[in-house]
Image 1: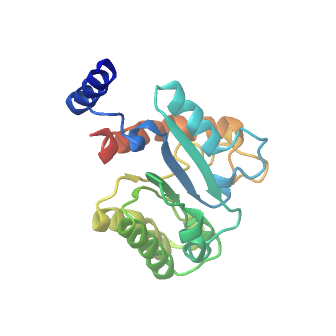
Image 2: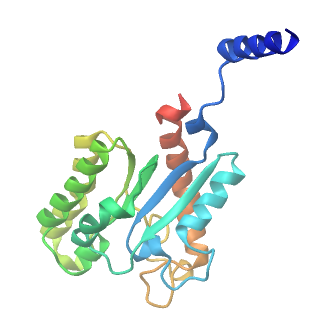
Length: 213
């Protein structure tokens, strides 16, 4: 009889207070989906954006696992072709950072926008939140190209209602001390700057996710 009473007590306790949800017991899965800027081109292990973002989030008390799904040289077309298998089920947030290589190759902004639009639509259909990281065109491509390319990210952020970090390389682009010798890829200190600046936006995005409600 005592054992039966114990079982009944445990059942009442769980009904009253609820068991820990398996979804909430797991770290938030974040995927950084992008090109060489996400992949950590030219950097030592642990110095890439995904690793340093995870360290900063964990230091801030967040239970997260940040996966690096960056591919050096990737364009928006390449990203679209690998999106479905690069972002696994269970992902809670994707930081989408693509378009820089399209710009460097002079690809039509219309194509870049179409590809990013399709990626956002697919992620939305899978109920995966997105933080869109924007890029900016080099001035030497002309004012018309620059205006069209730079406007891609705001237009898509507004269309899909996703948060936008306007320029992934904010504070780093053009600063020789924060870039590798090629002048395009951040060094370890440059990654630190990117993480420092984007971190509040990532945390705000995380706070709005259903699992945190």
